[in-house]
Length: 148
Image (cartoon, rainbow, N blue to C red):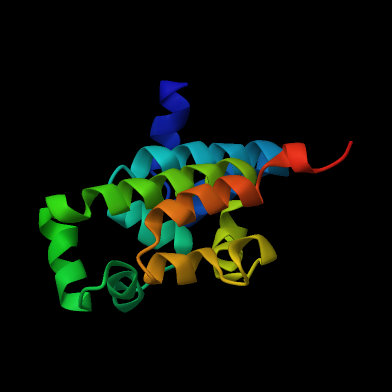
C-alpha cells in the first residue's frame, strides 16, 4: 500500500484523483473523499467556510464582524467569546456532513424551511441564533420523522 501511495504522490493531484476514482465505484470514492476532507479540515472555522461555501464577508455576517476580522481569525484562531457560536455551527455541520452529500450542503443551509419559521440555517446563523442552527439541522435531518 505504501508503494501505491508513493506512486500516487508522484502524480499531480488531478491525475491521482482520476486514478483513484477509476479503481472504485462512485459510493466508495465519495466516502474516501469525505474521510479525506475530514482529516484535512481540522480547523472549525475553515471547515465551516468550506462546507457551507462561505466567503470571508459572509462568514463575517454570520459572526457579526468584518471580513477583515475573519481573515485575522483564520490566522490566529477564533476569539474565546465566539467559541460557543462556532461549536454550535460545527455541530450543525457534523449533522449535515453525516446526512447530506457534501456538494449539496451549501444549498441546504440556504434553503428556507417551514420548520425553521420560513428561514434558512444561514439566516438563523446571521441572526446570531447559533443554538437554533444546531437544533434546526438535527430537526431537518431527523429521519425518524419519515414514515417507513
